[in-house]
Every structure is written in C-alpha cells, then in structure tokens.
Image (cartoon, rainbow, N blue to C red; front, side):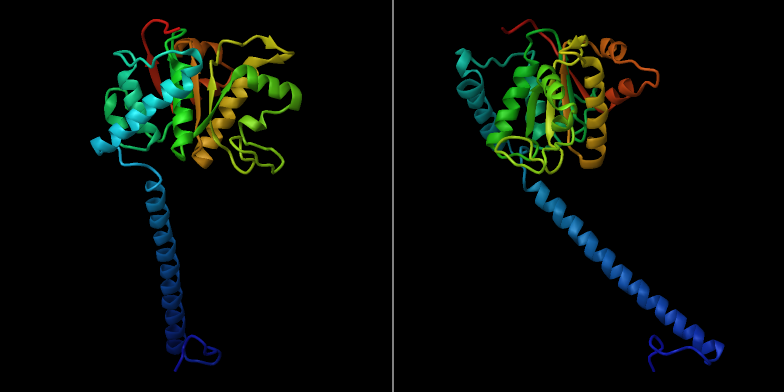
Amino acid sequence: MSYVTENTTGLPPEAVAKVMEKRRLDALRDEKLKIDKALNQVRLDISRASKSFPDLTDPDIFKCHWDFLCRVAEDIVLAPQRRKFVVDDNNNKIIIFLLYYFNNCSLAEQIFPDKRFKLAKPLLIRGDKGVGKTFLMQLFSEYLRRTKNPNFFFNVSVTEMVNYYTINNNLNRYTYNDRSGTKEDNTFDGCRPSNVCLNDIGLQTQTFFGQNTKTLVSEFIHARYEIWTQWNCRGHLTTNLSVQALAKEFSDAYGRTVDRFKSYNIIEMTGTSRR
C-alpha cells in the first residue's frame, strides 16, 4: 500500500502516523538529493575557478610569470619613457607578493607573515611620491590583461573619476558599471562590477571642477566596500598619505570611511623617487 498517496481521511491514528512519517522521510530524501546536487555544483565551480589561475607554487611556472612580468614592464609599460625595470630591496618582496596575490596563490600570505595579508582583501598601497605605487598597479593591470587573469583590474585616477562625475552626475562607471547595457572592448562591461584601482586618493580633496573630491572618493570607498562583500570584486587604492593621515582626511561623524580602511591589505612602499 502507498501511504504517501493515500488519503488519510478515516484511517486509524496508527495508519495516519505511518503516512505522515513516510511523507516526512520522502521529503527528507528529496531535500538531501537537492542539497547534494547544490554541493556538487559548488565543488565544480570552485574547481573551475582554481583552474583559471596558474600554479605558482611550482618554481618553474613562477619563473615563467616573473620573466613575462619583467618583459611587460620594459617592453610595454616603461617603453614610452625608455626606462629600465629596476627590482631592488625596496620593491622585490612586494612584486613577489603581488604576483602570488593576483594569481590567487596562498604563498602570498607568507611573504609578509607579520602583516597578516589575506588573498580575499583588496589592496591599499601607500608610499612617498615617486616610489612606484601607480607604476606597479599599471604593470600588474597590463600583465593580468595579457594573461587573461580573472583578477584583472582597471586603473583610474581621481581626476578621471571626478571628470566623469561632472559630466554624468554619478560614479556608476567606477562602482556598479552602469553603462546602459553597452559593452566595449577593454572597458567596464556594463553587466556587473569590475575590479578597479583608484590612484592617489587623499591628494585632491579640494573642490575640483565644482565637485567636492573628498566626498566623491569617500562614496567610491563605501560603494566598493559593498561591491567587495557582495560580489568579491576588489577596489584597490594607492596613496601618498600615511594611514594616520588618511584616517584624519576621511574622518566623518560615523567613522564609516576610516573603518573601511581595515578591510584592505595595507602595503608600505619605501625608497626614494624612481622618476
């Protein structure tokens, strides 16, 4: 007898109990099958994502990417200036960290063990003028684009962002990429947020083209924090200011912006100007 399909009207309590238990067990079985299917999809998605990145734990593969990065630096990024790519004590470990970091290699977290950097966090690179902050982000943006790396990001300046706001009265291009559904090669895709790096924050905090730059940068930071937590898309930053100066510059009544800085891997670049 099928207790699941049987109408329980008029059945004795014992039979009703059997019907209800059978229905419960069948529902539990169906739910477990559904959850198992979902878990298998999660495992498949994780496996596919991991295959999007090279295995830089292999020294030979790491060297291939290191050599290619150096070629990109000299033959593309620095070529217009006819400058050489110099790796020294001030930037060597940072470049190694970034190479691991952007390739989702866990070895990144071992380069500066006392800093407790995490792969999941965006970057805030700070240092004095000319030490190479913006250059490194330009270099890695180009390297990631040419290796078709999912962590590719767009490099933008505060001035560029302010100009866009002046024309469009919003920051969508730099936050949620609202481009009315249009798509262009090597531009924000208009479908979902992209990774981006905003360079030299904290320097142009005066009114600029009629806009309060400090307010716009603060809104960018808040929006990118939400994008990071919801979509895992990163909004990196570079600045000449110290962390303390940034906290003072962007302090507000609620402490929101200052608190957002805790979500970054804060990288200190040292040395003198390379210009």
